[in-house]
Length: 200
Image (tube, rainbow, N blue to C red):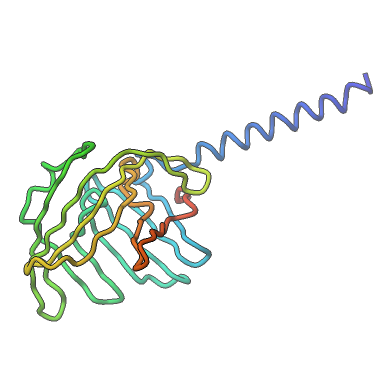
C-alpha cells in the first residue's frame, strides 16, 4: 500500500490543478459581470473599471492610481458624458440610440449629438459606425466574440475628426481594442492585455 501513496498524491495534485484551472476560466467577466463591475488593464499602470446599468456603461480610467478619464456611454459605443482631467463634455443625442441596437453585421448607423464642452464651446458631432465583421479576440486568457466596427466621427462643418476600427465586445459593452492607420499606411492595434472581475 505504501507504493500507492505517490500515485494517490499525483492524482490529488492533478485534481487540484484542474480545479484551479476551472476557477480561472470561470473568472473571465461576461455579460452579467458589468452589474458588479470588472477591470481591464493595459500595461502595468493603466487600469479601467467598467460598470453596466442597463444600456448605460460607466468607466473610470486610472493611470498610476490617479483617475484621468471618467465616461458615461450608451452601450459602450456612444459618449454621453466625459470628464477628462477635470474638463467635462456632455453629448446630447439627437438620434434615438435605442433603435440602433442590437447591432448587425454590415449595418451602417449614424447618430448625431449636440456637444457642450465646459467653458462654453458647443457643436454638433456625427458618429458613423459600419459593422465590418465578427471575430474572436483574447484579452489576457479570456476569449470574446467581437464586432469589428469602422468608426468615423465628424464635426458640424463636415470635416472628419478621425476614423479608426473598434474591436467591440457586445457581452462586455466595451471596445477592447482599437486599430489605427499610421501615416506610412501600416496599421497598429492597441488593446487591453488583462481583464478580471472586481472582488467585493
